[in-house]
Length: 209
Image 1 (tube, rainbow, N blue to C red):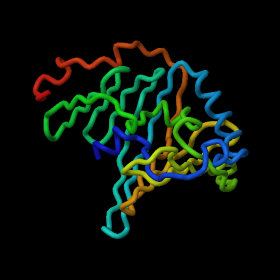
Image 2 (cartoon, helix red, strand yellow):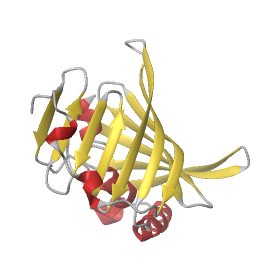
Image 3 (tube, helix red, strand yellow):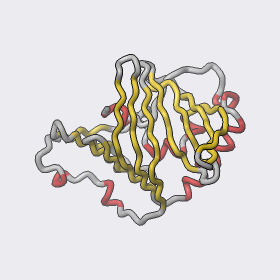
């Protein structure tokens, strides 16, 4: 779980073609619109449902979570964990273990802000289809990593066509598991102080760092 949260969207296959030729023009145009609109937001607050599914092992788990994003900084809460990125280090508080782990971000530590805006750099994209549900039209796009990784093979994005916002993302890993993040609430430009993203040991007085 910790790895999936820290590597919020991550990565694995090597493709022999260049990023430019491997990217579908229609998919790129859609993602550029989403990215450009997202970059205009000063802050983003998202409530989501996380579902992990592995049919072979009869696993189907769902959990609620939330994330607050300001620039590259974020704070995520889910399943007894709090993950804070202050722009320099990733702090992961694990409630059950009463510990805080501190990690430096790596090339594969994809944070939520990169998920929303980092398509050209990190992924090759392909437009799949449009579909309508409850009167809302969604655009379906698949992303494959531009660099070799050890975990995620593919990401499927479901984009609200009119709002130009991600409605859900599904990660597929090599072990046959899928990890879906369904956006339940998407709020933008709420004033958020930078102290929200500062790790304070006093907030976790009983935790071992």
